[in-house]
Length: 180
Image (cartoon, rainbow, N blue to C red; front, side, top):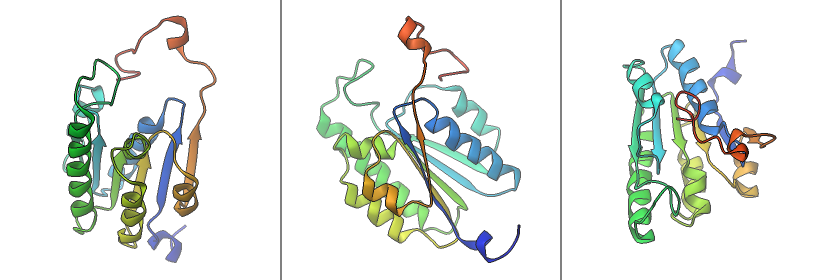
C-alpha cells in the first residue's frame, strides 16, 4: 500500500508489565533492516551482555545499537546513586535527541526510555518534546513500563504487554536466548 500514508513517520509505544517490549522493538528493527532502512537503537539502562547486542552487529550497516546508562535502578544488584543514573539518562537522552534530528535514521528506537521517565530519571516533558521534534518521515519507537496517558495520546500505535504467565513465578530465572 504505497502512497502518502507511507510518508508519515509513526510514534510507536510498547509498554506494560509483561515481557516483550524490547523484543517487539527489535523485531521492528529487523523488519526495517530488511528494507534497507537505517535504524538506531539507544537502550536506556541496559548495560549488560545480551544476544541482541551480538545479533544487531550482524545487521550493519542498517542497524546500530548503543547501550547507555548505569543499569536498572534499584534492581539486579544496583548500588549506583540515583544521581548517577539521572546523569547517565540525561546523557543518553541528549544523544537520542541529536541523532533523531540528524537525518541519518529512518527509525529510532528509545528502548526503556518510558521506564526511565517513570523511575524519575527524566521528566516526561523530555519525551513530549522529543515527539514534537521528530522528523515527519521518521518512525520513533518508545519502550518501557508505565506509559502515561499523555504519551499514549501522542502515539499512533500503542501495544500494552500484559503478563498472563511467566516462568519466573515458578522460580525459573532468565534464560539465554529467550530473556537476554
